Every structure is written in C-alpha cells, then in structure tokens.
Image (cartoon, rainbow, N blue to C red; front, side, top):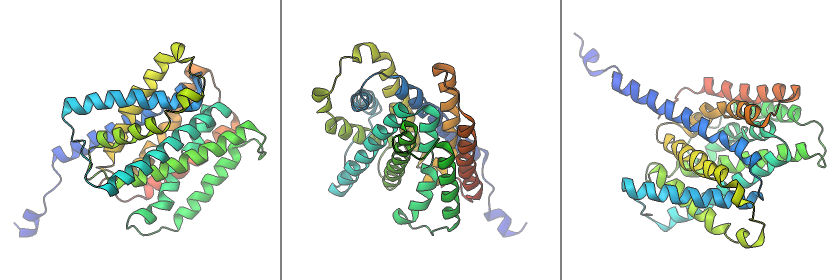
Length: 302
C-alpha cells in the first residue's frame, strides 16, 4: 500500500458529527435570536429601558452560569479590556437601533434590513483580519441595497417605515463591527465570558435611563423581558459567539441568514403581521444575496 494513502487519513465520523453538532448549535442560536423581533416589537416600554432590563437580567443568568461552570473570567490585558468596551458600545447601539426599527416599521422590515450585516461583514472583514478583498462583494452589496430600496415604500425621511429600514441598516452595521471585533478574542476567551463582559458594560452605561425614563410598565412586561434576556440574549447570543470558534465570521453570519424567516413566521403567528409584496420581493433579494455568498464560501469551518 502506498505510503501516501497511509498518511492521508480520512475525516473520522467523530469529526463529522462534531461539525454537525456545531452547525446545529449555530442554527439553534439563530432560532433563539430571531425571537428578538417579536419581543422587541411587543414589549411596551421605552427602548433604552427594555435594553437595560435585557442586559441586567441576562447578566445575572450568565454570571451564575459562569460561576457554576467555573468559567475563567480573568481579563488578560488592558488592550483586551478596551476591546470589550468598544464591542459593548457597538452591541448596545445594535440593540437600541434595532428595537427602534421594529417600533417604527414592523418585524419583517426591521429584521430584513438588519440582515444586511453578513454582506457588511464580508465587505469589512479584510480590514480586521488578513483576508483578501473580493470584488464580488461589491456586486452583492449593490444587490442588498436594491433589496432595501424595494423594501422601502418611498424614500421619504418623514415616512416611519423608511426610518425603520435606515435604523435597521444602522443596527446591521453595529452588529457587523461588534462581531468582527469579537472574532479576534474567541481564541483567548470563553464565549460566555465574552458575552458577560459586554452586557456588564451595556448595563452600566445605560443605568442612567432608569432614572430619566418611564420604567413603570416593567410590572406588566416582566415575562416578556425575562424571555428576551434569557432565551434571546443569554442563550442565543452566547451560542452564536461560541460558534465563532468553529466558523469564519462571514460563514457564521450567512448560515444565520434564516433568522428573518424565523422572525417573520413568529410575527405572523403572535402579532398577526402579514408581509407586503414589496417585503417578499426585497426580502427575497437580500436573503438570496447572502445565500449566494454562502455557496461561494469554500470553507464553512475553521
């Protein structure tokens, strides 16, 4: 038997099963995160107050989990600490602009405009890591912009739906930057710890809103805020961050492109929101674009 055939081993069933498990975890994380659309639209509180409660409650859950699992919470350098602060600001910006987008438009428009972030990541990734820029991403970015144009009923800044789409786009940009920043840290820190660092910072920064805004509705909104904090944030976002250990940022983002589908379906079931024809056409163009990029990706896993 040739020596080469002995040295080139085939991937073991364990490795294949491991990859399938990581893929399942990422898809499950996508489903959990997609609940943010319905919950963000439904919760009747000022957006900043909702985000504070989301962060504070998720903080408690993740801290207990880290202590139970004995997750190392040590920050190794001042540079890393600064990175966590910057990424937390982008995450807070992502949450706040996204919830405003949901309030001003609907779950379909908010989620579909947010899901321009995989293409934004593909365009910006060469600035963060040593990967070659792909000119095809310009074409895909243009297709996404066309999809956003179709989503908007008319480009008038007085129109609340247009404002919703623009805020969704801002949310996508913040989410893309935050994800690219964290990608550089997943090899050194546990995903749960990374999420905990961020929500601690968001909770501290947004603390003043609890004294400046109306918080009285929390008495009736507790069940939904707890779901948002635990299911969407503590579990969903932590699983997504953990997936960056096994997938490229662009690949993980593209795989999660089913999130608008889940979100729109949940909005139809729980909020009776029926997408318009423009939403179907523009949304299909956006999702098709990220799927094209997924097929172009040669490596789904690291």
